[in-house]
Length: 483
Image (cartoon, rainbow, N blue to C red; front, side, top):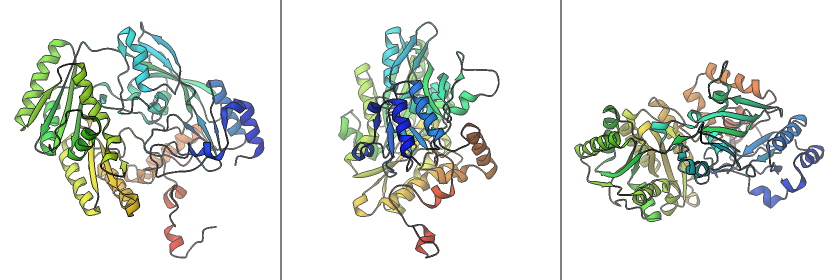
């Protein structure tokens, strides 16, 4: 509970100019990109450096006040939703590139630096940062660390965990420690790896050292249309089976294509059932030979149109269409939920068919945009809240995530579990698995003050969902009363 003593201590820790307490200002922090989950915090603090983050955390620890770290608020799993009577520690003012080392190919960043700005800082040295989530213009490296984000190029280059060498972390009691090191591989337990993807439940990363890569010698990109989603899926499997590892293989179905084309005019075919964006990079000779193989595979599977980007401008337009897809869906539906799950590549056609049938049964449309190369799906459940479709949409979204587990995949590829899928964790993990995760979390945060109620299922979370109030089933049955 945030009492007056705790408020005064937080103001002293970060300065009065770095505290938001008025009701209107607090409303700006009530949710992240998953707007169906909302909770107004009691206070927001905006530290300007690592020490002031640590000072704020020490106050919260001393006064037993729960706190949630927040970056750009672009997360899609409710992971940055505040806690009632708790504090939001916003990292939006920690956005400096602290160092770029072109010799060792490293950069040191504050957590509020956007993904795209890392590459901009590295570009003068012929370097870039490989992970590129579709929201790279606004998502921050701190959020990437929390969710272990991937993006379109994760098939070849891996996820955030493959590019983060070290982190300066404020633990839940306010202690400042370093996890990892210059090489990324340290003796003893891999605490860097434990922290990455922990969704803000183990502490707050305040300085992050990332690995930079040389800009590829050659980049080649094509956009291919197909008569069906299964045909496009077979192309993906055949490309990988041929020993080719593209930098990216992205798939969009017709609903997603229509939305993206209406939004940005990227040159997609409006009536095609499915499209693939395939990009290869590397040495000129290797890239050229493999690109011809990819084109032949596309043609063998009935490609109805194959457009090769002729220059950097065309390549940028193709990617603009793909990266605009999530937001563009707002042009064809008043409301939508972005889901995130993973299936084996060999089951792409099956899962998409099942999703279509589930959508039909629910009376809702589902647009599909995904990283086809590694089977990371992003189904968008379209609905109209004003027409009373919210609960059906939420149920369908949950069922799609759990379907991915049923087919041998996972609940999340990069958006995280957060609040949205915590209750589905037992579908993927056994009781012992969840208990071990809970013990690890307790080792970092025995008082459960750091982003509580996220990631792991709890009776409160699963029985009484945050957000818009819904009566508990026992309340409806008259067994319990709401006080």
